[in-house]
Amino acid sequence: MASHALLRLTNLHRPLIVAALIASALALSACATVDAQTTAYVGVEHPAPTLPSEVQILRTEPTRPSVRLGEILIDASVDPAPPITQVEQKLREEGAKLGADAVVVVYDQIQPVAAYVTGPLWNRDIDTIQGRKLKGIAIKYQ
Image: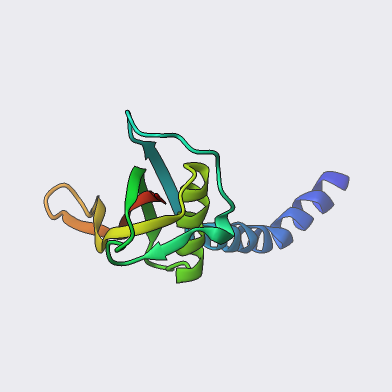
């Protein structure tokens, strides 16, 4: 008799559990992402890290003399897209690790970053996943 009551309880809660799992999966997949990869150049000075709040974000080459310290590659989602302030903060943090005074953005595009295949073997569709690619050069003023 107790197993029958447990089975009935499980059957009543099954739709709620399934709905909770689906909601959790959707919430996790809907998160905006910003990933960075930093490469320090070989043969240049390696200054001490700076504060991220002091790193400037530039869209054009500075007029002041500077030394290039390394590259920062940013991969960001576009659906949903993170706030631009989050992307800029990631550039500042990565530039600060290299000891930069500024990061010059030299590439910023939305482009296909992956593809997936759907449908049966005889009628497949290929869909692309878009992503934001951004490249910045970390510099130190002289």
